[in-house]
Image 1 (cartoon, rainbow, N blue to C red):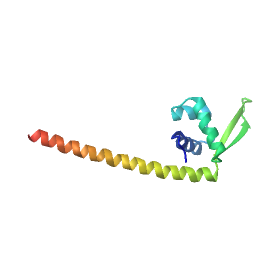
Image 2: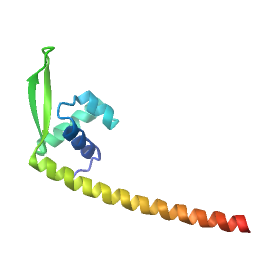
Image 3: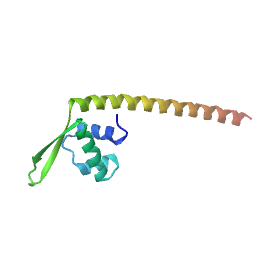
Image 4: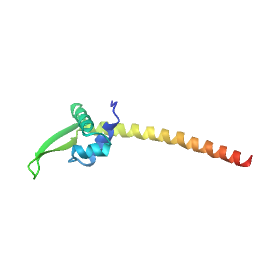
Length: 110
């Protein structure tokens, strides 16, 4: 569903800390504030995240973010896909390491 890999990370961040600020999102995602805002707005438009504003004690507006039921389902789906991809990567690397180990042993005995 998402062409942008940052959406998964953003869903995880929001679930862990609904009152996270966009600057904190950007820093955690390793992107600019504008990119974090763009991703957040995309999630809101898709109905995966709901934004509520409230007043903070320093008299500035702040937002609280909430995963919608669709957002929770999508995060779960993305988590499963993420795990499948990482396990496949792990298997490739594990096989490469084993091949290199065997090659090193052959070279050491030659």
